[in-house]
Structure formats: C-alpha cells, structure tokens
Image (cartoon, rainbow, N blue to C red; front, side):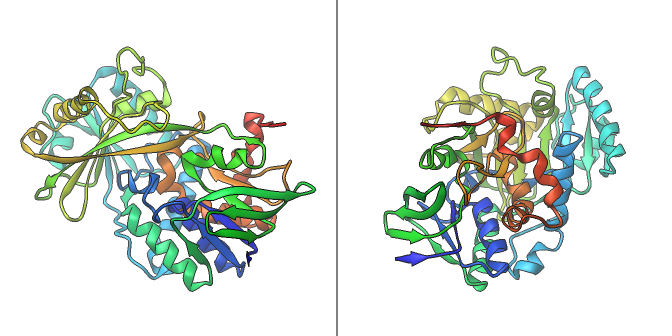
Length: 390
C-alpha cells in the first residue's frame, strides 16, 4: 500500500497549486486526478486574471493577494505559462451601467486598484473593434492573463521536482476514517494510507465530501465559451461587459426572464490567435448538452459589442462547470467533524485568478498559521452551517 503525508484530490489549477506548496514544505504529497491534469474545469475556461472586476472588500483583498503571487510565479516554478500583464477593459453600454460603474470605479480606486473610467472616444481608441454605440469603458492596467493548462502543468512540474507524486486517470472511490480521523484513501488503482486529505475537486467536491458524511454547499454552474478560428491581433488585453459586472454584484439586470442564460461578454485571445468568446452562467447540473439558442445568444451579445466578430468563423465550443458557493468566495477550511479532512473548492469563475493564493492558504491550514492565515477567517465552511450526514 502506498502512503503519504497528504493526498490532494483534484488535478486542476487549485489542486496542483496545493500539491506544489505542500511538497515544497517537505510533505510527502500524492495528487489524484480522475482524468488528465487540467482537463476538467481548468481546461474549460478563459485566460483572464481580472482584478478590477472584484467586489470591493474581502473579495478584492483576496484577489490582490493572489495577483501579487502571480508577479513572480513563473520564475518560482521555473516554467512559463504565458503570464502577461496586458490590462483589461469593462465595456459600458447603458446609462444604468454607467451610473453603477462610476461608483464602482471610485471604490476600486479607494482600494488602490489602478483603474480609470474612459470616455467613448478613449475606449474606441484603445479597442478600435468596439461598436460606436457604447457609452464608455473602464481600463485596469493590473489585469493579466495566463494559459490555464500551462499553469496546471507548471504547478505539476514544480510539485514533482519537490517530491510529489502525480497519479492521473485514477478515481477516488472512498475515504476511510478511524475514530473520526482520516486514515486511508481508496482509489481505482489501490489504497493510499494517509492522515490528511485535501478535497480540491472543484464542482465535484460535494461528491468527495459525501464519502466522509459532509454536505458541501457547492453547485455546478455551467458556462459556455465559443472559440473562433485564428485571426490577427483583435483586441488589447481582455474584455468584459458591464452587464456581467452589474448582474454579478447588484443582481440588477439579472432577471432570469430578461437574461435566462446569464449571458455577459468575456472576450480574450490566445497567443495562437483564437478568440475565446464567453459566456453564459446557468444551473443545469452536469448536463453538457447545449442548444443552438444559447450559442446564438452568446454570439449575438458579443457581436453587438464587437460587430466585426460577425465575419470571423467559429470552430468549436467549450463547456465547463464552475463550483458555485453563492457568496462569490471559495471554501478553504478543515472539517471540524473529521480530523485530517480539508476542503479547498468553490472558486467558481475565479479559480485561475485565485489558484496561486489557494496553495498558500492550504499550507497555512495544515501549519496552523502563516503569512496568509488572516485571510482564512472569511473562507470558513461554517459560514454555510454545513450538515453532517448520519
């Protein structure tokens, strides 16, 4: 039987970040992934690391801490993952959005976020492909982007260099406990003796928690992204629309009847030239079937803001499931009922942005302290009053 100090379940950007930090501390670490590394949620998302879109307060504080780690992360991992500080834009189309974004920008500026409000002319100068109907935009110079798959691989490479073992295409089938203490992880490739398990299963984290009788308040939220043929450089940085921001933070303009698919523009371009056009936010369980009405709605919304997209061919779509908690924050905590069982999931659409800080936070959990320990108070499982199954 294999043995480890800690077993990390989940091989996306969150799990691999955790595995790297724990192995870096000298812990004998094994990561288990049921598919390929980074092929599930982390492989079905865009590449943006937005700072200016975060809600002022703790959400922004957490994002800033993670963004600071990103600054030197390629050097630390000794592997490039296409990190670029390219800036980001939020496009404003209506007077209601403008009123909200004016207040939002002031709050962000008070939090020392480098963001500015642009006029229509300034926005069109920066992004010539924008529609002239827009009222303006914001621009955040600290917004960045990465390649999520390369980021996962970079964490894995660094974790292995520090002694971690990575086991992919292997499913966890059970977690054994003795007198309320984690003792073993059962997998399709055999058992692993361990006293600590980190559940970094993303939208699949509730299924893992059921193995130890924990009801985890995470739901899969489906998102769809359209992918185009390769084209010449089309935009500067990454772009969101204010409809997405107002819906996310105010729940105005988010009436289900008005926007049944939760559509809001998210636009970026890969280094090879493909445009990633998002997206939608729906609760459909793990149903991957997407109808033509949804795809057409995403395309129409994007073309309204960037009309020249209409002449670019789509080559495929991408469907992913984001782990939704309801308050926009992940759960990073130990389960008080089961010694040695830890949770690091529920990042929803911020998994890429928060992956660097999550590895540090889990290290703080296991150490009982550390430089980021103060951030954990807002991420406790107890804020949802979890229920222990009989």
